[in-house]
Amino acid sequence: MDTLTKALAYDKQIRIYAAVTTDLVAEAQKRHDLWPSSSAALGRTMTASLLTAILKEENVTVKINGGGPIKDIVVEATKYGTVRGYVGDPYQFYQYNDSGKINVSYAVGNDGLLEVKTIINNEVFTSSAPLQTGEIADDFTYYFAASEQIPSSVGLGVLVNEDNTILASGGFIIQVLPNCSEEVISELENKLKNIKEVSTMVKEGYTPEDIIKELVGENNYELLDTNMPLKWYCRCSKENFSRSLKMLKNSDLEEMINDDKDIETVCNFCNTKYIFTVDELKDILKEKNKKEQ
Ligand code: ZN
Image (cartoon, rainbow, N blue to C red; front, side, top):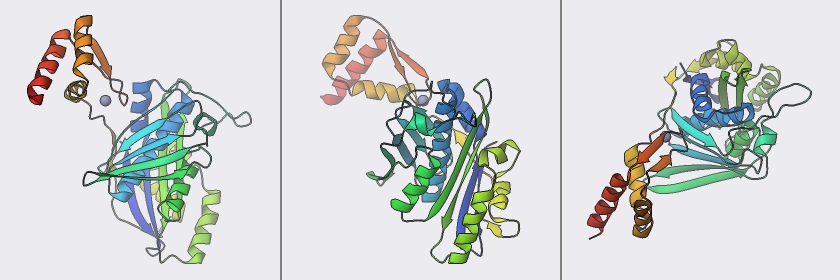
């Protein structure tokens, strides 16, 4: 099961959130038939979006468009730990020649923005930062420093099996709190240079707390929340799609009805198809006009 654990470390001078997200990325991979670069890009963004939503205690919509062949990455994460997302092109796979590792930055590109949108009391707030490398973790690290003015370090990783299914996924965010000393910052920077990749830790069976232990050392942290469940979830429904159809112009709805064919709508986030028959379209038009009178 996917979970997230929160901790403070170095005498409350830093905050760490760590997450294991293998199952929720596996669900996204299945839903969208993602190839490895698309899986890694979407999986890293889903993990980072969950960390961001839970840190901010706000639901967030994250959008990344770096101009690469993957096109848009769109992820919605809630402060309650649910997440859904999609990429413009699910069929992207590139590898680095030297290591054979999945190449994410080429697929994503780095000519664009990382945008984080929150809705507070019906008002939309958008903050953004220019993409740095398209590797996602660097881009979130920069976003937190530039847009939120919080020195942070983000680690993200996804490992993919030969058959494109997901082997391991996880991530962490470390944030420096205002009282943090220079010694702690430089000790932490040194540690981060020498730790295993987070995807390797998850593959080896590390829990979120084990990841925290690896980052700051044993007996150097206090746990806040442990094992908060994380889950892939799409809140779409036929009802939602019928509401969107009601927003169309009368003439467009009439045209669909005159075509005398079922209409198929697809949810971008989960690929569920909803069929509307001509009779249902007629009902939608009738109800729409009733409301408008
Ligand atoms: Zn859906």
